[in-house]
Structures are given as C-alpha cells and as structure tokens.
Amino acid sequence: MSTIDGLDISHHQGEVDFKRLKAGGCNFIFLKASEGVSFVDPKFALNRQAARAAGIPNGPYHYFSADVSPTLQAAHFVDVVGSLAPGDLFPALDVEDEHQFKGISPKKAADMVVAWMDEVEKRLGVPCMLYADESMIVHCLGSDGRLAQNGRLLWYAKFRSRLEVPPPPPPFGKISVWQFSETGKRAGVVGFVDEDISFVPLEDFTVK
Image 1: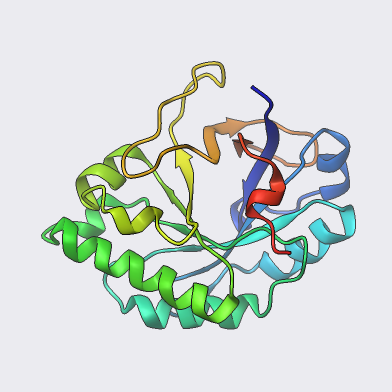
Image 2: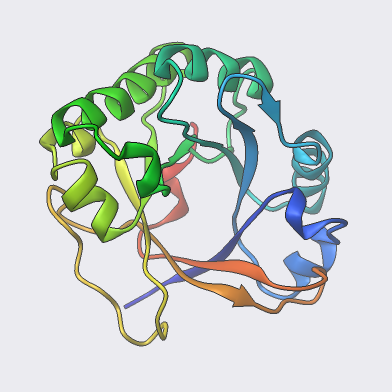
C-alpha cells in the first residue's frame, strides 16, 4: 500500500524548522489553529507561513470543546484561519476528550460535531476532516452516519506500529489519514511530535 508521511503540530512543539522537516520526508502537516471560542494557537500564523515557505502542504485544525456552542466555535476557527488557498489541506476538527461528553447522549454529541462541520464547510467551501479515535466515534458519537457524509474524511487516532494498519470504525469506509504515534522524533522538532500516514493522495484532501 502506497503511503505518504506527515505530522501534526501545535505550539507544544515550540520552534520548528520546517525546511528540515521537508528535507526529512515530511510531506504534509496539520497545524493547530484554535480551540473553543477564544483560544488561538500562538504559533499557528508563524507555523503556517513557515510551512508554506518550505513547500509543505498544510491545513488547520480546531480542538473541539463540548461545553460551548459549536457554531460559535466554527466562527472562531474561520476567523483565525481566514481563507484557504489552493494547495492547503482540508480543515479538521479534533474531537478527542471523552470526558467532555459525559452525560451527553451520542445523538446530541454527534449533533454538535456535525453542526461545527456544517458551518465550516459552508464558510470555507470544502469538506472537513474528523480527527478522533475509535472510542470517540463509536461510543461518544454513536457511529453517526452524518460524520462521513458530504465528502468528510477520517483522520484516525490509534497508536501502534505503523505496520499494523487498523480497520476503520463505522460509519467510515476507510481511513484517509492515520495518526499512529504521539512520540515521533524528527529532525527539525525538539521533543516528541505526532506522526501521521496518509493512505490516499494528498489531492483527496487538498483545496483546489
């Protein structure tokens, strides 16, 4: 199976040398842009500029908060990101904290996540990607079919050897991008970095 190596990065990685990442085989990067309705990743603008200058396709992601309006979160994300340029990756929604959904039914949780994606897709004009693990998708979101509608792609979190490719959780028919490690070591990044593999061509989740 042909794969493409990538990373995802936030302010937690500090100063990043994107030219060294490019030289080391990093072919795409997701960059944290925002969280909730007010937080802006302090490195997002600089990281985006540096990744573009290094020639690495990159796209923004938002860390979801279940205790505030998904529509307001979507508006905040779009305000931070602005417009997407040809060659940018599709925007992604990071839904990973199951504790936030305690006491919320899977239907209501899925309603909230879908509301964020609907609003971002309306504003930016491209499908969203969903970042989540199996437990989040199946238990917290009830494998809701809407998660995979409208061209939405799965960015799947499951930490294991990159040789042990996991099956996709329903309702997704395939994994587009797989985050297989949170303890990667790459020249250009001090400390650990999340590592990803794309099983589909970058064109499948790139703004035209």
